[in-house]
Length: 141
Image (cartoon, rainbow, N blue to C red; front, side):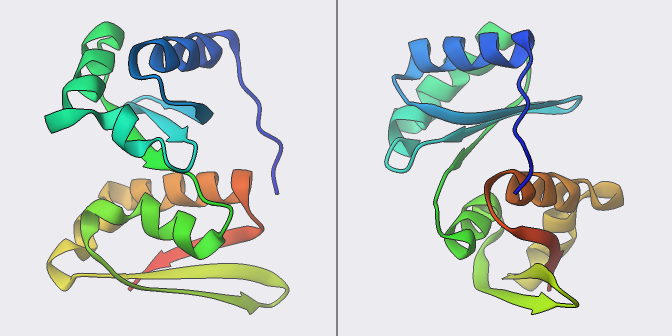
């Protein structure tokens, strides 16, 4: 597992998110395209709100795209949560050459979106998994 390093900006984002949503933030990742909040298990509904109202307030306040993922201690469940919006069909975590690798099977029509332009979504998934589990490699099938 990789060390989680937060800076003043991400700490401010976390505080703002928690104040608006009432959900407890476990991690915050600030990338150019969006801010990703990993919320404690059971807090996803609070974080998103009815019809997405709560997360919309956060998005408006930050002036940034926001993505919310529910944390799980179980690496398979966490990986499923990361790719939730792409219609996860199966998750498999195996050890390959002393490295734990997670493979996510999604609906075929969502595979390209799940991978993302230039593999961006895979990079984000790998970053989250390395920060919160011993899975160091991720692919989409």
